Image (cartoon, rainbow, N blue to C red; front, side, top):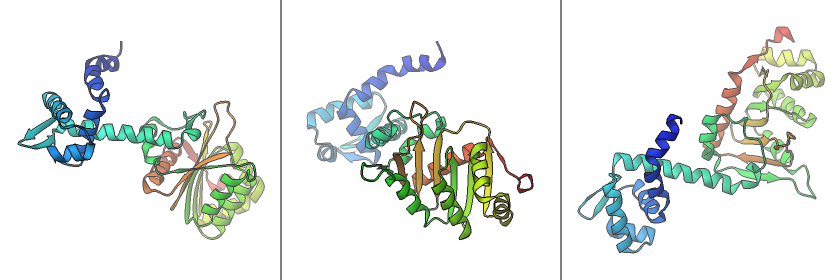
Length: 273
C-alpha cells in the first residue's frame, strides 16, 4: 500500500465528516469570506439555528473553527479546507457547465498540473456545430482571430483555412508562436513556401517549435481569447465542438499549456528550412 493510501485511511473520517453534510459545507464556505455572527450564518445559509449550533460545535472540536462570543472564525486549518473545498466545487461546476465537451474526449494531452487547475476554464463557453451551420465553431474561432495581436498555439491539426488565417495575422505584423508536429510544419511549408516562412522568422514575427511527441490537443491563445479543441476517445479530432473564452484565468491556463509543450519541443532555425 502506498503512502497516499495510508494518508487516505488516516483522513477518511474527516473527509466523510465534511462532505456528508451540506450544512457543514455551507457553514465553512460562508466563513471563508470572513467571520460571521450566528444570525448572519442563519441568514446566509437558511439553515435552522439548532442545526447551525450543532454543526459549529462539531467543527470547533475538529479545530476547524473557533468562536469568540457570538462570532465564528475559521482556524488556519479551516481556511485551507474552505479554500480547497471551493476550488473542488468550481472544478465540478466547470465540468457540469461544459459536460458535453469534456465527455468522451481524450484528456491525456492536458498535463496533471493543468488538470488540477481546470477550474480556470470555468468562464469558457462551448461553440457547437449545428445541422444548418456545420462550420460554426471554426467560423467563430476565425472571427476572433481577426482581432488578435499575438498568438500562441499548440496545433495537432491545421485546416487550410486556418493556415490562411495565420498568414493574414502575420502579414499585419502580429507575433505568432506555433508548436506543431513535423507533418503540420510541412503543411505550412507546402502552402506558403520556404522563403515566406523564413522571412517571417527573420523579421521576428514567427517562431515555430517542432514536437516529436504526438499532439492530441489544439489550443490557441491570443491576447484576448482562448480556443481549445480535443480528440475523441476513438482518436478522431472533434471539429464540431470548440471551447472558447476571454477570461484572464482561461488565457493564463492556455499559455501554461503552451509553455509545457514548448519545453518539450525544438525551436526551428530558419537556416534549416
